[in-house]
Length: 205
Image (cartoon, rainbow, N blue to C red; front, side, top):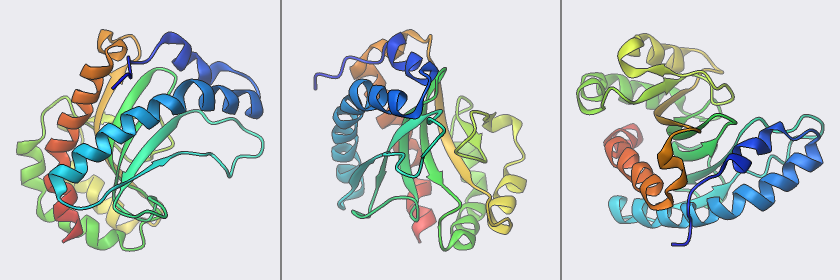
């Protein structure tokens, strides 16, 4: 793998004015790296899960005026799309990388996924380390450390509120030295997903 990490220029992409200009930078600077990372992570997840997984790189096609504040790749068990399925994300805001297992509002059977996660709440607390974070909205930078959130309340909200979401994973700050080491960064993503795979599998039951 030739991926050698991310640079300050990659994160500066989100300071570029204009939808067209920022999208060109995303396509030229970041998406080729996503392709390399994504291929590696798809292979890893397929091996771990024993079934086919598919890479989706965000196209931001719905945007007509405002440039994206973040960008990502997603990996799901569906070839046509990922938003209606539990999926794995790897992406960038201007100040950090996010590595998620994501359950977003477009899931058609959110209540069942939430129920399965609630049934495994003690395992989540015991099997997931303190450096993991929770997000309740994939469009926002904000996240909360696992140890600082009422996990049961978050999952109940995800179950009961139509637009509610639940994402669990890790953040790596843009100034973290590991950002520039491609191999280490991909290994962190693999490790994150390995820890979260049992919850992905339980959610699908």
